[in-house]
Length: 440
View (cartoon, one colour):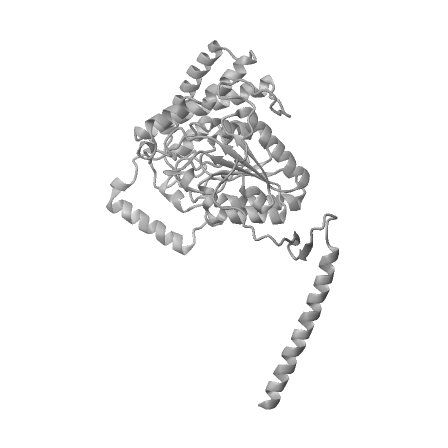
């Protein structure tokens, strides 16, 4: 026992002597590491960090000035003097952007009313955020891959998704690519590089980062674009996505729609820091805050962000400050958590009217053209809905397809299919009258 304790004592003494020698070496090296101003540094695995004798804490509840918001057009549609506009909008793209925004506004209104009439089960609008989605979409390239949350139908509309396609998906008919198996507004288009919507918040963010990593490995000049709300930014997936994007150095543009409310939770209860843009530097991500109601600002910010992401192969974060003028969805009554005066005030700042005024200041649009377009667009949306309503639902058998390849279902799905047919035989009222059992 004595010998064991003696060995332990010698061992501890040796370790202590070694550590003391290391400390002397570190102390000596620190004296030579300065920036010329007398500031000492220490080299750590995470980087070179300055040393200080001051006991000072950083951060805490938001104090002092907030990060500024980039704007090029004011609330009345007039250009902001001295605004930096590296990519101005010409007549052609401006008219296309405005028509897309106006179509989106009309489409949202009529689809919302149709849901209220019981024609399909669910809907949510982009009211108040048309400039955010369409302005950003116009700055992207067709090959850029979009991972949306659920309020980005303006991006699809810009890329060429038709009113008929929107209607077919909402009605869940036989022409819906999802064959009625997704809930309404869960759009997707492989042809338009728009991944299908998934209800759980923020799951699209790590997916976007993974896809961006694949683009990086393939040498592509495209980027992935991840849309999300400030509420979704509280999910763990958001933090994981930001960190992976930064450390893997991938070409991903994060676009946060900070519209003030995550359903009924106001932004004031969502975070204590300076919004979402402040999180960029924490992860080593370049970031900018933009007026989400200013189309020209959104276009320029996202176009520059995309160029940065491609040129340096790294992520960029854009926070679009906007306001959700409508209810969260058809399942929500926002008058229960915000005042009528607040909603009325923001609806008066309609981004569609704001951009229309800017376009008219350029002498590119007239009241006559406006009236004709509104009438035509309304008629087109109504016709698309009428046609979609006539198309039969996908068959019951389609509930079990597209999971496994091959001509036959595996035994477990065959069993489920048989049980489903038995249930419908016993309770035929469960099946819509326009839904066949087997595909024709």
